[in-house]
Length: 252
Ligand code: IPE
Ligand code: IPE
Ligand code: MG
Image 1 (spheres, rainbow, N blue to C red):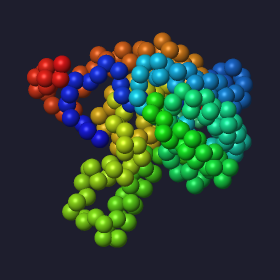
Image 2 (cartoon, rainbow, N blue to C red):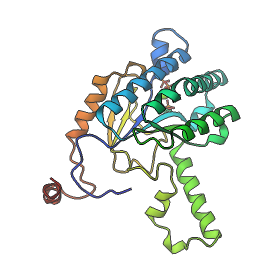
Image 3 (spheres, rainbow, N blue to C red):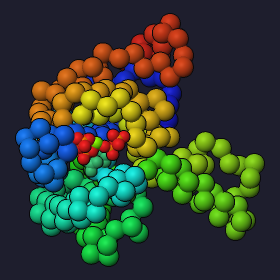
Image 4 (cartoon, rainbow, N blue to C red):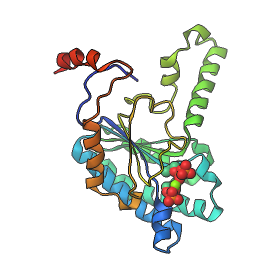
């Protein structure tokens, strides 16, 4: 995860999104929350189309958090059905469009049928080098860091790693998404200004953008608004603006 100060390309390489507001979208229409989740699934397709069109290399979507397992049983069950249906319906088309799909999170908590579908989707699209699509499901940033710490401890215990060689890179390599650049831009819909246990480590220097728009209301203009904001940012990575100027000239 390089975090060196260079001029950012106008288009983020990696976009990470908290897709929030499905329930409120439905409640405002006096409909069950699951209707909002269904509408949210349509917004996922719109978002993927937008990223492909813009040449964004990687998209990571927060679909279901570690904490979301605590929602009422009926909502969790309906979400699982929706998830299964989406896997059945969308994977072939995404594969045709050269999208590589992967899932990050504690997948042991899903039913064997869903785990099998996830694995099949990953296998089917593993060689694709178009959009790198990561779905964070049963995911928590704390879980991610914890499993990386456990992997470090296992390597030390097995004699493959010395304690003094544990550094930020060693931990980063054991996190999910280790092969991707960290997100350049983070978007959260639904108006809440929080991270809600998403990619805690990876977001260290990500540009953050929040919108009141609820996820099912997402449109290309909203996404473009986020990209425009991103293009106007000076990413200093702890340096001063004056230090960045010569670096930027040398990369132009
Ligand atoms: C996000 O929408 C989807 C999931 C967390 C699964 P919410 O269901 O959180 O919608 P709001 O925030 O209650 O409106
Ligand atoms: C974050 O949304 C998780 C996902 C969008 C998958 P939540 O709705 O669960 O987050 P909080 O409860 O508002 O923090
Ligand atoms: Mg929410």
